[in-house]
Length: 372
Image (cartoon, rainbow, N blue to C red; front, side, top):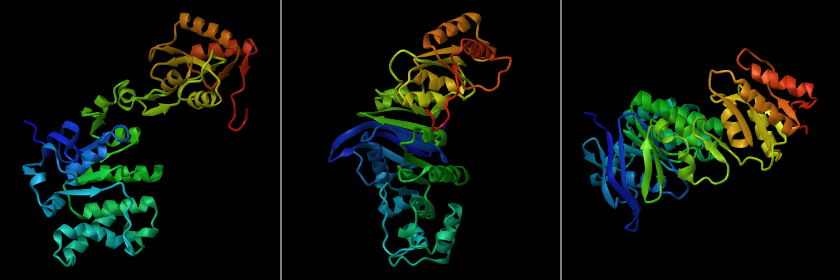
C-alpha cells in the first residue's frame, strides 16, 4: 500500500467564507515536485496560501504524514514547511547573509541569537544555492535572480520538509529560470524535499514536475503526471485558447496561421523549416509545407501555421500518391522554398519536389535574416 508524505483531502479554499475551489485532492511522496498551472485568477495562489496557513481552509484537511497542518502552531508549521512568495522582499539595510539567517527564526529564542549550529546551517544553505559570494552584499543591490536564490537559501536554512513557492520565476530571465528550477530539482532529489509551486511557463512545468495540478473554475480540472496532463488539446481547454495553438508534445505555443490561399510551398524537414514557417507567419504569407514525417520536429509547427501540410507516417517513405498531390499543391502556390541542404534515402520525395520546382523555375532562394 502506497504511503504518502503530503495529503490534501477534499480541501476547499476561498475568501471570507466564500468557496472558490472545492474538493481539492493532492497526494505526494517525499521528494516529489507538484506544479499548479492554470489561467490568471484561477486560484493557484489561493490554494498555496491555504496550504501554508495564510488563509484558513473552508473545508477538508491537509496532512504532513500524521500531522494536521491546520492544528499546528505557527512555529510548528514553520519547522515543517517553508514559503517563497511572488512579492519581492525589501529588507532594508540587510545583507544577503542576514536575509538567509532569517530562516532560522523557528529555532532561535526570543532574541533571535544564532548558535554555531544555526550559522553552520546558514552557510550550508548558501553554498547549496551558490550565493556564498553574495554574503556581504546588501540585499537590495542584488539582481532579481540573485535575490531569488538568496530567498531560496533562506527557505532551505529553515530546514523544512515541504517548500511552497508562488510563481518563483516571474521576475527571472531564462538563464535564472533554468538555474532556479535546476536547484529545486536538486533539492528534491538530494534532500528529499517535497516542493509545491505555481508556474506560468508550461514548458518548464512539464520538465520539472513529477505531478501537475490544473486549476480552473470551482473544481480542479485534473491532476497527474506531465504525460497524463499534457494530453492533446488539454492546454487549449484549460486556458480557453481561441487564437493560435499550443503543442503539448513540444511545449510550443504558436500564433494564428496567416489567412488566405497558400502562396508558397515550403519543402522542409528535420527541424529546418520552423524558423521559415514562423517568418512567413509574421509577414502574413500563407503557405503549404511538406513532405514531413509526422514525428519530425517541423511537423507540429507546420500543422499550426501552414494552410496545408503533407505528412507521411513515421519511418516510412512518402508514397507516390502523396508526392503527386504535393506537386499539384506546389503548382497552385506558384513558388517554393527548400530549407533542406542534404537529402538521404528516406527523404527522396523532398529532393524530387525540390528538383521539380527548380525545373519549373519557381524555386526561390531561402530568405535570409533581415532581408525581404
